[in-house]
Image (cartoon, rainbow over all chains, first blue to last red; front, side, top):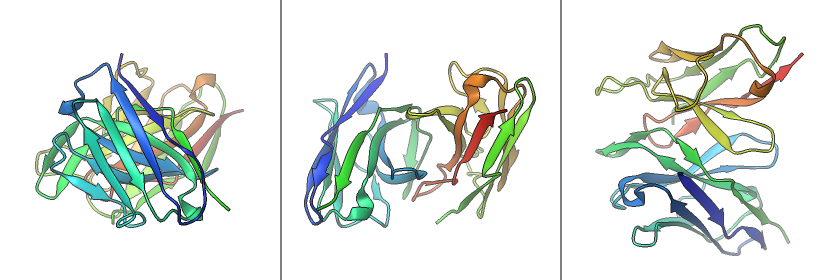
Length: 125
Length: 112
C-alpha cells in the first residue's frame, strides 16, 4: 500500500525555523518526484515545492523561494522541507504528495496521486 | 503564472442528479507530448485531497465511472453523472503543465 506520512509540524514564532519530514512506503521512492502542497485554515490548496526523483529538478513557489529548502534522502525513503524565516502567512497544513510523471527542460509534468494526511504548521507569537 | 479559474463557487445537488464544474486556464495546458496536464481532486470534509481525474480525462484507480473529465486547451469540465451523498466536499482543478503548479479556487459541492 502506497503511504506518505508527514511529521514535524508545530507552533513556531515568526522568524523561526521548522523542518518537516515525509516518510514514504509501499512504492519505489527513488523513482518518483515528490511535492509539498499547503492549505491555510479555511483556504484552498497552494503548491509549495517540488523535487524530482534524483533531486536534479527542484522548484519553489515565489512565496517561499529563498526561505524554504526541499531535499530528499532516497536511501531513507524520506523527503524534507526546511522552513526558515517563517511568517504568519505560512500557517497551514502541509501535505506531501507523490507525483508520477517526468521532467524535461525547466519543467516537470505530473499529477499528485497519493497525499499524506498533512502536518499543521502554526506561526504565531 | 498560469491562473486557474473555477466556477461555480458552490453547488447544491439532489442525489441522483448530474453536476458539472468548470475550470478555465489563462494558458493552454496542452503539451507537445500530446497530453493535457489538467487534473481534478476532491477534498472530502476533514480529509486530504484525493486524485479523481488526471491528464484531462483519465480516471484514477478506484474512482467510479460516474466521474468524467473533458475539455481542451484552456477550457475544462468535471462531470458527475449521478451525484451520491459520498461526493460532498471541495473539488479542485490543478494544472501540472508548468511551474509554479497552480490550483483553481475550489468548488464546494453539497447535497440537497
